[in-house]
Image (cartoon, rainbow, N blue to C red; front, side, top):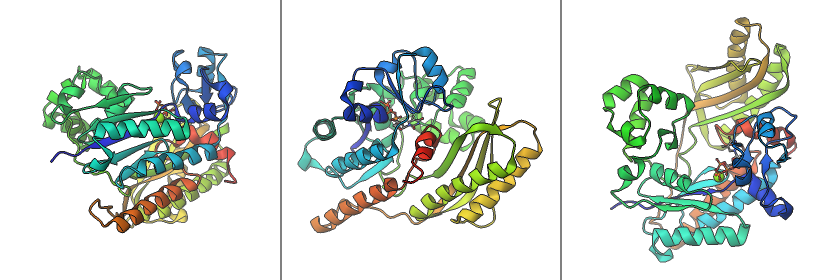
Length: 395
Ligand code: TTP
Ligand code: MG
């Protein structure tokens, strides 16, 4: 039997929350990320701002050049966290099989959830509820696997609703540009372009061995995704593959003591989330960006896995010292993370008794609350959140 998976993602999340709380911001080019004269990047841009070419992760100064009249907001992580929890609560009402992918997105496995209607009806109900209760707009993708559902939710944003019928996954993906595929970043896109691969369909037709040779393990993933294959389960506990924190410095520096101080803070944040997730890390990842934007990342895999702040900090400091020895350039951004996570992963089951299910539902919510109750920053997303993260130190 094919599965029915929804991917739900809120439109222009941070900005939309600001617009709900301050209605005078509606219909205007609004950017959350910080003041344009400050360093840092756009975290979220309203669709009005996007018509000027403004995008997430773009430097604020560039956004300002594109649209000087845009309203620039610092953002407040607590507000987004509150909305996120309420959003996840709405979703959890439709199925206990819920996997948050970030503050504003989640997968929902609604296979067998017929009491709420067809997957399409469930998607419509979710959109309606999100609008009524939060005044936010959700885009939804429906498919037989997570990866296709995710591409589908993104395709008709804002206010999208796209259903891909079982068997049509590959045809649906084929005409889309490769960049639509999760996991294909700028670098991969460039490499693929050199290989004359522009669409997902072209990628799907490349022999697996060739992709493996070019991309290693990621080649296998690219091949499967491009063919609409993704067997991964919707699993509340399974998603976190890495955790990282990084921050752009207010001023460039070469002072190792300052950098170590920041590194310690970041290591503590990473360690706290790691323990929160009940996991241990096998690898520690370290990142530096210099003032000329050259960026280096280094990974170290000690003999033993660990979940302590001290272990993360110690390894990251070794990598920092090595990196600084090789250059005289000053540092603009510093980050630390963990990957290769190991630890228990518990499964939620749809086939439990009603009381067991409601217990699982509560656990789901608790889990989300814990996950976001902390000054949580999703892995990989932290670069744009850092202003907010620093601003809410006392959170
Ligand atoms: P997204 O869902 O990727 O972006 P969005 O909700 O602003 O816009 P849309 O979904 O309509 O395309 O991310 C959700 C929130 O996560 C976003 O509002 C801000 C935050 N975020 C960052 O902080 N940094 C980033 O680079 C991205 C992409 C998002
Ligand atoms: Mg979104």
